[in-house]
Length: 401
Image (cartoon, rainbow, N blue to C red; front, side, top):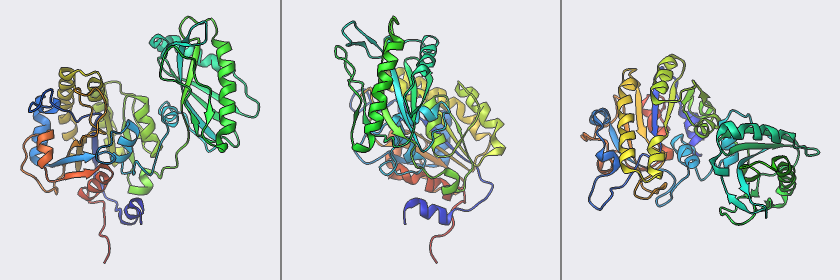
């Protein structure tokens, strides 16, 4: 019996509310040995007050020593084994902008780039072209016609766009055409297996026609294709857990992740304050709320320790808006660690706090890496967090006689 079969057989209905507040890249490191992390440096009175009422530990996103991307990191938090369920970047990007992928679709993330007269890349992101400049170019690429295949092109943001190929016999296993370097031409689309040969040929035709349509553009006169992927087969949140779930996120990718597991995307919030307003307005309509905060991750990737501290404090300031709603279970965690010391995602366990009236308090009075190392949850794989959330919400029956 796999984990989802178990939860399906045990889940129970009640009126409880579960909130999962995800501070992307939350975990950190000290700048020097023996120092404090970003979370330990930040003034977080509201999270510390929650720590005194709750239980904490370290969440391992995939396996010890594995640094995850955002996709696997969030799937683990949602209770989907990130090694069993793999989502391609193209599918994430397409779903994130609201494109409904079908069974005959292959989604691809496109990047505009700048090509020199010799066809070699001079800028992989077309000078980080603005969305206002790039969106009309993405729309222009809808003129590409490939016999026997429907082609969809959607703008995303700045240099990014989405291509969806729809047709019979399209496999999703094609290598990226981005060489990850300048001074060389884009790679040719190459199938990784026979089932994807038709897709690679269609992608090559798309690139050839697109390059003609973009010729003469000052910045975006070329493109690369990445993350070829079909729609993943994921059981829905409601089916597995019996929860009607809402996602309150700003960035398209996280909306995409939530949509792929069957959550409703609610509101159009662009700030944390607006996200709290959306939460309040939708409180009566859902059982589970996923709230995503991006900026603890982006500041970590920038290597900006002080900025990550400031963003952590901004997150803390929003916590009373959540606790005022009196959720049955409140979880604060991250999808992975992004220490500013490393300027990248890392493998370190993520501080995770669970608060409910029936959690086993661990007598800790701060929420931090050092506290989570000694907390009552111990170190655990993220995929088990939803089981703890359900049990603390009274939504899990007894297993066995």
